Amino acid sequence: PAGATGPAGATGPVGATGAVGATGAVGDPGEGAIIPFASGTPVTLTTVIGGLLNTSSAVGFGSNLPGISAASGTINLLGLTNFAFSMPRNGIITSLAGYLSISAAISLLGSTVTVSAQLFQSTTPNNTFVAVPGAVVTLSPALTGAIAIGNISSGITTGLNIPVTQGTRLLLIFSSHVTGGLDLASSIAGYVSAGIGIS
Image (cartoon, rainbow, N blue to C red; front, side, top):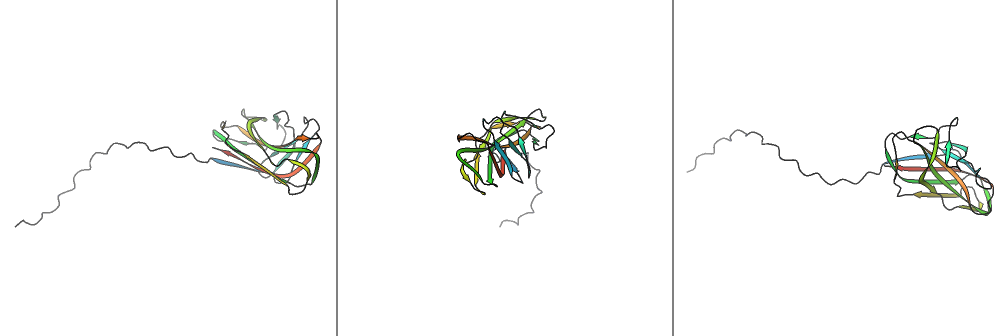
């Protein structure tokens, strides 16, 4: 008959490490960061006949600054309140959303006024900002006729691919423009908010 099984031998040395496997597929890109904006108190957006003297409002993080002249596409904040933030890294602007809730009734009979939010940048950086091409959202519906308190307009622009470099200062401006009917002077008052998507 077979003899009893002998004791197990000592464990042998660890074998050599195998070759590194192939790199896996690249994962889906993350959604990136969302930069929120809110006016706090109502903004004031004015139109003047001809449009060249329209005034806008800079919007920050719970406050706003009215009386900004942005019609030329360039804004100088020297000596004014700071509402810009600085980019801590390179990024891509991918989307921009905006919202308006009217806080004072207004009559725009015979005219149509459109509100928009435009992103401005200072790449130097300094206190002079220029409009970022394409980084704008137009709110709808446009304002026309008798506009009551609580009337809401909103919008979102997606599919953007706008590079922005580390250190650039970004500034968000809400404006109004006469886009139809009679060219008139108007003053739009309302609470606004916005959000920028940056990957």
